[in-house]
Length: 358
Image (tube, rainbow, N blue to C red):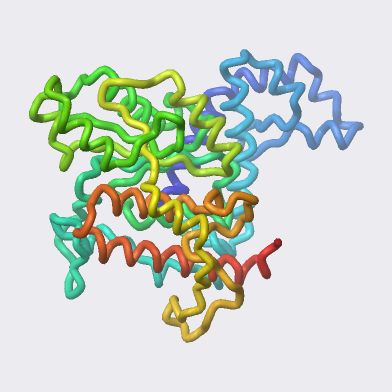
């Protein structure tokens, strides 16, 4: 089972919930009399018995609080069906099977010992997840799902026990991971569990580095011993999308939450400087296939360009650098493996999509 199966479950559950109302609305609007107009008929589609609405007029006929969910679920249903129907795509890495990276990027959790170090010689018997992290939530814009260039998929597939893929726009009633994430945020604010602490990786004006956050926790005499234990109890939220999408998702889900044990975290200044001026091109053999990169790829950057260089940082790279900040020296081998996965993913995406656009 892959993380894409969880997305499909959420989409199908949402559409099934709204199906009776969809059928009632379309009946009221005389859909059955549209047979003579092929363009109108295309606006209402059937997928495995579930009606999908394809026009703003139909979306607007629903209560305001339901419109985003219906729109997102309908769009994702079409994309997922097309992705599956082609039969050429891998459901784990979202690349065509002939460019699949899964054999080069296996899950990392089975190789982690209790200190976050990679066991080189043999797997441990159980997946212990990422040390110091309870859950890693990837809040993903729906347009990123099934994209070849998306890097969050490699985080979820590398840490399947710890990670949760959360699709923005589909509510907690249909997507358990959304409920988990929002409960983690509210519990941290309200301190329902003294050991519960939550980090949101996003560069707001009040965001601090992990080192500054932990220093403030240690200096705060009002914090009890369980909460002050920075080596346990962290939930981490990373936002996956373009910068415009990420700002909107942060505003939608987290703007109303602050205080308690909820912290906005940003990467340390050294990491940002490196990303802003990193002109080191990855040219080494990285996938074991004997081939080299066909393009000049800047390490740690996504395959989509941005006028501000550091904003080209990929979701995977941002997550890797944050986890480095949280684990310091014990995370070195795991961090190196994540960087390698990033390079492999980019290279194979270019092989599938062709040369980068300037």
